[in-house]
Length: 307
Image 1 (cartoon, rainbow, N blue to C red):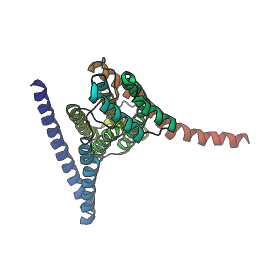
Image 2 (cartoon, one colour; image 1 turned 90 degrees about the vertical axis):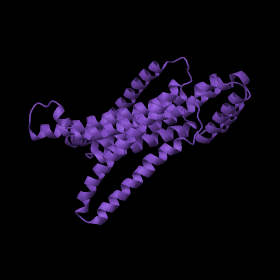
Image 3 (cartoon, rainbow, N blue to C red; image 1 turned 135 degrees about the horizontal axis):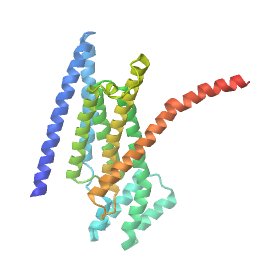
Image 4 (cartoon, one colour; image 1 turned 180 degrees about the horizontal axis):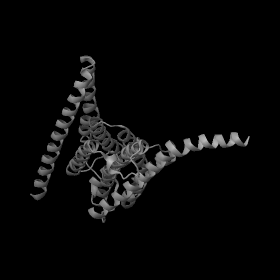
């Protein structure tokens, strides 16, 4: 009875957050559309059409698509028995053959796992995690990197909110497509609530003067510019971290086969893993956007001088 009440409460929270986000997006979109309308009604209606396409294609479709996947997680193999266990082992094999690039030898190896009786689940879990895990991590990394760059550059709350919602719901859909199954409905709704919450937060960050919150030595034009750059990078980093947290939690729901781990341990693990990936993204972006160009410019000048 208690779990049912929690489930109903989660649904109420999710619907409420969606309504708040929808009203915020509509209000901001109408305001921006009116400004575009000053150049002609055609620009305004094109803008509204694009907003509808983004919402339908980038938010509604990924959310609905998730529920077509079967409910499962790797730890269930330790709890299932008999025909149910065989059914999920066959599902894992089909998914590996479909979603991963395997050699002919590996394909035969995977099919052979089904004949190992008591060892089938352990062999499949180990192989599945080894092959699917890196693919999931790659999708998570790429999405978080895009979120960091886009929300750091964007200075509009509408774009940030739509971009964050679309990126995160699409990311959840891709993780589930790669794995071939989804978490339980309460877990999915919990993830959707988290995405809706961080979407609102992403829109709220845009309204804050983050550059004024960053201590600067002087009030010169250069200092102001550096403050804006630092604020944009901070905003992008926060949004990327929240995306990583959602993705890591979803991955742990699906790929965690260690039933002995508590929810608290999984949450702590998701924090540390998300922070580690974000550190890698920030380091690589600094190297790509700052370090390498500076080395090319000044390194080239030094070589010319030497010559």
